[in-house]
Structure formats: structure tokens, C-alpha cells
Length: 115
Image (cartoon, rainbow, N blue to C red; front, side, top):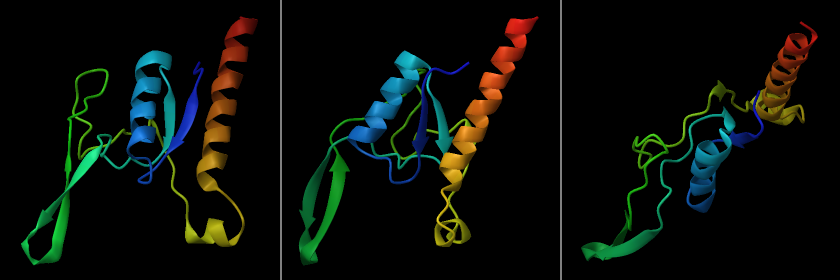
């Protein structure tokens, strides 16, 4: 059964995305939500003609298994997404899904203990 369960979504980026990658590598974390932003590296702003600015990643990060995370993100094992209906109703469907998934995982572990 999992020891760490973390919620992620497209707002998970930068330092938090690097933390998610470390949790995945060190604690075999289970992620619930939607894919992260895919921008774990610090970025450097680069001014372009015409007053435009682009940001360029300073490094390339890879997941514990060597897969690219830049522009891809950390993929959750358990998909869940917030909805307008849930927000209006004061609910957090991602948190509810994580709780249900964790309860199911714990119930499965308890069932194996009894055997």
C-alpha cells in the first residue's frame, strides 16, 4: 500500500513539481489529480524585439526512470479533476477521490492481513 499520496494538477510546477518527482523516486508516492505543468526547471526570461518576453528553462529534468518531465509533467496514477459544479457546491472532487482511493487501498491491505 502507498505511504505517500499527493494531489497534483496543472498548477503543480517549478519547485513543487521537483518535490513531486522526488516523492515519486524516494517514497513511491501515488499522485491523484491531473498531469502537472511540465515545467520543473527554473526559467530565465529572455527579452525579444517588439517588447516580447519568453522564458527558457535553465535545465532539463527527468523522472526517476529517465523519462522526460519537461513539457510533459508528472502523470497521476489516479485521475481526478475538479468541476465547476463541485466548486459551486463547496466540494473538492480531487480530495474526495484521493480519500476514496486511499480507503480502498487500506481496506485491501486489511483484508490481506486477515488471511
